[in-house]
Amino acid sequence: MSAVHLEPLLVGTPFEDCFIVAYDALYHGNNNDPTLLLQKLEEASNQTDPIIIDKTSEHLHDEHSYWGGGRDSDLSRDASHISGLNKLLEEYKIKNRCVVFDNTWNDTHWNTWGIKHIAGPFYIWNYIIERRLKIPAWNHNPSKHFLCMNNIHKSHRQQVIERLHHDNCISKTLWSYRNTCDSQVFTSPTYIDQATGKFDQTANLNDLYNDCFYTIVTETDYTDKNIEHITEKTLMAILHGTVPIIVGVPGAIKLCKDLGFDMYDGIIDNSYDAVIDNNERFEKIMYMVENKSAEKHLDKLRTLLPTRVLRNQLLLTNRQYWFDRIINILFDKSKLLN
Image: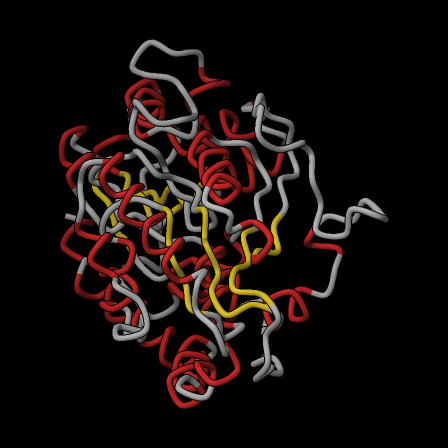
């Protein structure tokens, strides 16, 4: 989401006249070259309006996450970290005038760094509402148990695919691994359509989701603590009517429920979501996956879902609902401008 998408949400709110730094567009949209971002921060430092740091297309990581970095890291490595952002805000002497808009729902790290912060359903607005995605057709007769698509290499993603092989679940899984990794268990890269070398996103996504009952969502983050969030990966599983099993940070399922989604309790055991220890949570998830792989008659199981699936789809694509929810958050957080 660039500033052009954020500005309409601010009209008529206390944040309407803020100076917007479109952090994601200027940094990630510029091939992670910080030049344009630094120019905008310099511009922000030369005016007196309150400042919005627009991180609504992505989210910031803690300083110990996969992306590396810390307080003394080079900007090119840690601009995706809360610590890196803090460094920039202090360098340009604008920290006390800034409010960060992003998709992490736990304020622990933000409070640690003394950065004002607003969380909202911006991923939903950006990836679903602004793209005007429609409710897709839904298949009642999937041929596979699981869908597991992986793009960028991360250790938890590699471990999931290796475990699916080890537990003899891989034959019941449509899977991909776009990047290379050092696995001794599977070949990478591997594509959904290995014959043509097509990556998932060039295929008909609806066909892939429709052919599977569950989606094993290997989320962006797994080990970050106190950063509760979901990304478009979880949202797409919900939109396409599969049952999500989220290999992500603790609290992802709870967040989905807080946003109003049915996470299919009774179909799956979501108790893994509350397990803080990363290894224990992983084992609990993969044990459930192994058990689910033994399920037969997926078509009959599918008959239990239509009403629940449609309710989620209608909620996820409800523009007015998410607009109102964001506006209410902005008014509730207006005190941050003081």
